Amino acid sequence: TLNELTDLTATLKIKDPFIHIVNDTLNWESIPSHEKAQSIAPAIFTIDPSIPCGHEFTTHFDLSGNNRKLRLSYTHHIGKEEGVQETVTPPEFPLPIYDHQTTLATADVSSPQWSTETKVKTARLIFDIKHSYIGDLTVSLLTPSGETFEVFRGRGYSGRTLHFDEDITQKVKGKNGKGLLVLKVSDSASRDEGSLENFQLELTPSLFLCEG
Image (tube, rainbow, N blue to C red; front, side, top):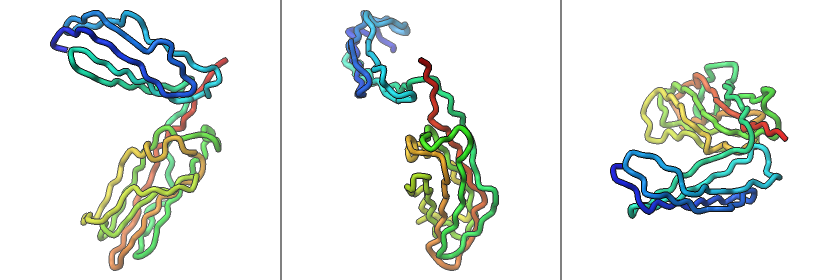
């Protein structure tokens, strides 16, 4: 900050059945410009011994000082993270995309680090399509749990190639990852055809080691 901070306070907020706040209030003496300072007393919370390994919770700190307010949020996990990102992709490409049909590309998530209960922590979807009119296409992803969500709708898109590379973590985080993930490319019109050139998923499982 460019000015001295005075009357700085913060309130700790946690909404989680396994977390119990003991002291939620932090105070600082005046903090000179460009310097750091610890609070007079720490925020304190306790964790229920029954909390599951890998459990995620978020701490929020609502700060106020110099007539300004700010919220800082931090995400935590119980245990040591052990999940390793891996890339899964079907073995054969390109796959044809025909008029009024749906092309399916299936990726099998089955490495030893995935069990039937393992959840997805992060996910990235990448694929390339060549088509004489991309605007005819809709692309969706079918998850192992049977849920389908749309990732691309071509309406208004006039190009002949599509490179898709996006983080889809928010769509699949916390869902079971082991099994078949199916990319579905649907062509809704006539006269234009093309091919799915490639498809891959970069997945990280939510795996944690807890001792004791």
